Structure formats: C-alpha cells, structure tokens
Image (tube, rainbow over all chains, first blue to last red):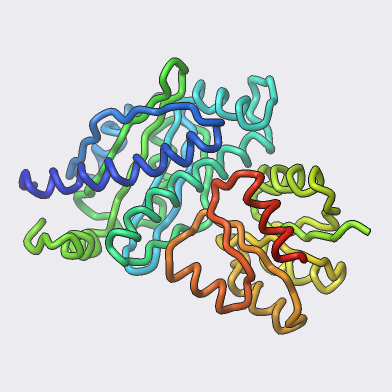
Length: 198
Length: 120
C-alpha cells in the first residue's frame, strides 16, 4: 500500500476516533481522552486478528455492518477490565459480572461511539454511512474478530484502520476499527479530492 | 395531569436513562418499546402525549415506525433520539413527521427542553 493511502487512512482515523471519544467523554461526565497515533494496515484476512491485539486476550467487542453510500464494518473493542469499569461508571453497578443491563450499556456506548465516527466522516464527504443494530460479543479477540466479519465477503486482504484511545488517569482504553469496502474507500478518497488512492 | 410519554429504543440501558430523565421532570412514562413494531402497537394501545424514538432498531426501524404512527395519528408528537445524526437521516425523520431530532449522546437538559417545546 502506498504511503499516501496510509496517510489518508490515518487522517480519517484521527478525525473519526476524535469524534467517537468526544461522545465517550460526554457519556462519562467529561473525562478526557487521548488518542494514540492511529495506524492503518492492509493485511491478509488471516493475520488481521493478530494485529488486533492477539487471539487470546478476552475483549468486549461491539460491532456494526455499515450500509448506504459506503459499505463496510466497524467495531469498538475494549479489554475486559475497561469494560467492567465502563459498566460501573455508566450504571453505578459494583459487580465483576457483566449482566444484561451492563451488556446493554456497553452496546449503547459502542453504538454511539461508532456512529459518531461515521457521522463525522459523513459530514465531510456528504456520503451516507448507516450502522446496523450493534452486536456485542465477550470472548477471546480471535473469536470476536470472527463475529465481526461473519458474513463479510472478505477473500484476501483487508484494510484495517485501528486507533487506540485511553483516558487520562484512569484505566480506560480501547480500539476503534474501521474496515471500509475497497471500492467505497476510493469513493471517500475522491470526496477529499484524492483521485488515485489504492 | 402529567403528560404521558412512550420510549422506543432497542437498548435497555438507554430506555432506563431516558425514563430517569423524563420522570424526574414531571412526565409519566407509560410504556417502553424495544423496536419499531412494538412502538406502533404501544402507541395504539396507550395513546401517549409524546414519543421518544430511536432510529436504528431491530425488526422495524424508527423512520418506518414514525411514518406508521403519523398515519394512525397525524397529531402524534414524536422526538427522535438517535446517534445517527447524518443529514439525510435527519431530513428523512423530520419529513416523516418527527417534531425534533436529538443526537446521542445528549444531555438531560436538551431532552427536557425538547419535551417542553414539543409537548406544549
């Protein structure tokens, strides 16, 4: 993948994740978040899970299918400890177990973050990007990754944009992952005046 | 008498959050729907003064539900509460008959302000 395309992907990730963490901050009474420099990769499908942080780590993943002018997949992944803390902050529940209400809170939080990311890109491109009803999985990263891409017609390589974010002074961290359809990714690039990416 | 509200949202957490805000401000939540079909059925049954409606929901989305509720009752007062704040969606919801559009995450004051304005 050429350097110009990677730069463009990183830029999209900064903008999108910036808006997603503003939304997260609003839901958590103004906690401040910082973004770790995002990276973008084009990877064989089979290597993508490893890139997401290893197959064995238990994570909570909230994922949606995107339809409209741009098709693709998006997910928000949190380590289990972060997910427990988020449930506590959102619901006031002091429990180790993530129950139905906790799952529902994480689902709504993930949905709002992912949709804020898409709203920001939509505003800049005038392209409609509609998220589906979010799915939620608590499992090893490898299994969550499979859930995210269940039904995806991914045959060889995927473009993955990953941004890590974390809260200042608190153990909140997560990843936002964006996998646009290749043809539709070029559509986004054209809206920014970049004709020959990819 | 307190004005009645129907909440339609697919996540239990958001229904609980909205219920707290709405009831604290003197309104009565008479029903909760988890999808568009349930919202229509509960609207017929309960005839609430106001409805808060999510857009992205299973079975039937909020836009379809707004259209159907407006067909049943052209005077229905529906406020959209959705994360999906993209312009074409806002326009579609308002032209389907929604009276206001709140983009999640919203703060409590904004919800109350909308209920007051639309419910007046």
